[in-house]
Image 1 (cartoon, rainbow, N blue to C red):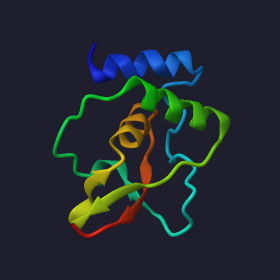
Image 2 (tube, rainbow, N blue to C red):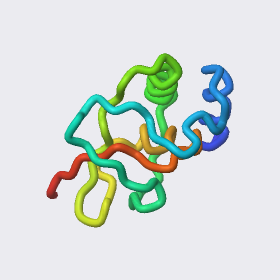
Image 3 (tube, rainbow, N blue to C red):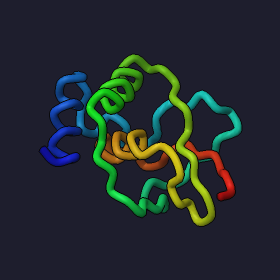
Image 4 (cartoon, rainbow, N blue to C red):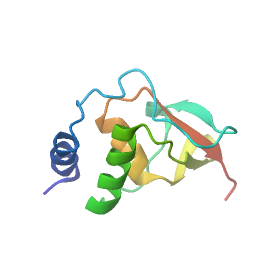
Length: 103
């Protein structure tokens, strides 16, 4: 099963619409985070996404629970948060909360 198929299945199971985050981002638990347009985050690897992590993120979004921001480096290269980024993209988010970390 591809990552896209897995996400579609889990989004439906969570009772969320595919455009649940359209034009916005998920709730973030870090007040020092900043929003970056989703299309500006650089993803250099295509990880195999873990079902349990995706389910936990979708459950938190469905319940309105705040999640940690993704971690980016220079030019918004993704360092941590592949699952949150994938879920945000699948739910039509316009941006994603980020924190910056040097290498």
